[in-house]
Length: 366
Figure 1 (cartoon, helix red, strand yellow):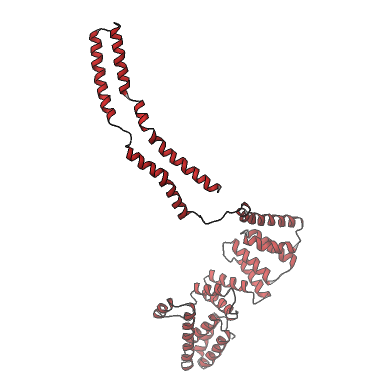
Figure 2 (figure 1 turned 45 degrees about the vertical axis):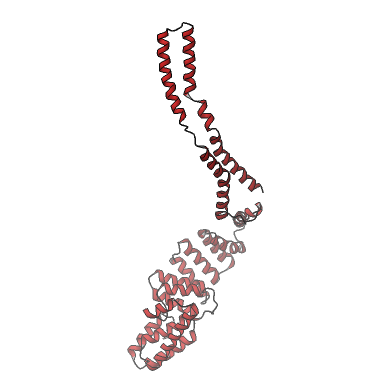
């Protein structure tokens, strides 16, 4: 209610500011009229002539001049410069009714009339949450200054610093966590990620070394493998990057939360499977995700059927193996690899070509 009272008071003040000059127009004009001055001058000349202070000739000349000025002033006074009564009434109606109406319409359009009161405690909740996080971090950092060997403290602090964008501090925290908690693939990966973030997303040689250590500890460490592929991409080795990411998808669960990230990375380096013609791309563009996947699987099945009849097509076999890996069907990829070796095994040139192509897929066992 207080807010609406303030709005009403402001509207009344604005209307009063408009109406006040309109109501005073006539009075102001009459009070400043030159005709009144000239009439006073004529009366004064008459008194001076009667008292003999000026001669009759001078009095007559002065009366003629002042009378001329009085006539001119009277003619100007007949032209009323103030607004006409209908105009003033129209302005008054607009001020009294139009201003509130326009204000209400604007507030209904751009304001939030249905929004309830927002308690002061809730207004400051977001700010308090942010400041409380900063205060918590400050407390942990103060604690660690006095207890630098508290591995648990470094373990808790490091990921928070990463989320806050304090990447250099996060790198130091992860190093201390490894020192006092021991080495694990996850900690090495997190350290490498913080290093890459501190370098604006560039996987430096130092960060790459951390990811390599993580994979050495756990060959299935997802984050480390992804960043190793990213390092290959940044070095211009797109085929190597695609091979790493395809191998990740080949063993990934169907509901892996990082699957879409890796698939996007494959698309970024131009590793799509299988390649669609212009006509097929045009058709697929308007399809749903489910229909598009069905279409791609149909193409893969047709390619597999053709290769059973034309087994000497090395490029076809490579496309088929690559397609199965992108679709996450590693068993079918391995089976296709075996069929390909059997189909071209009698031709040393084609076999070498097949082996060279398989190296980029991470499946070459020779």
